[in-house]
Length: 280
Image (cartoon, rainbow, N blue to C red; front, side, top):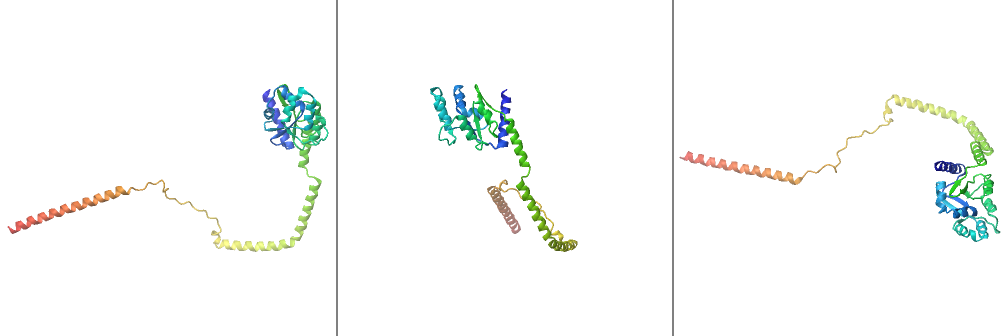
């Protein structure tokens, strides 16, 4: 049951948002009977309970006439009066106090321009508001809150409004006829100039064909740049160690010098022996 209830509420909220332009945060106009029912059945906090129903953040409103009516009911409604004083005041512009029903109907008006959700326990008030397009209604049963389905009148009104959007109005039709007349007059004036333009276009086409036959159209063609192979990333390439190379180079030079000195000494020794033997 809970899943079906949530689906039904989502469909109703989607209907009012699409067809009548309701936007978040939703504004809920509460009367005294609804506030009293919330207090008696301890449905608190009220904003979170309404948020769970509508699936979006809400702002709770009431009117001065509703507060005055709660105040006139006596001490049994004092807690409800204190809770209603914490709500946002909707503008009603009534110098003399009216009943909550008359006040709410005047605030809603003919088309609910302020996009209020009306929360009330008064069945007669809900029945009268169902005849006004774009007025979603909320009521409570014991510990549960419910959003009423859109009435047949509201659905018919939304369907007729959608059909009117699809068809053109008389003013739009007349504007379209004037545009067509202007275009036809402009086309007649431009017939003479169009013949000259056709001759110019034919000349340009002949010049282009001659240029293409000569083979000079290669420059006009789009040339795509070929991606060349790039070198390696210098950050990823390790640098050569100079110290090891220098050490190896110096060691090689020293070994060569050492070999050269040894060989030269051996040659000198051999040369001395050969001289002594020759003298002998």
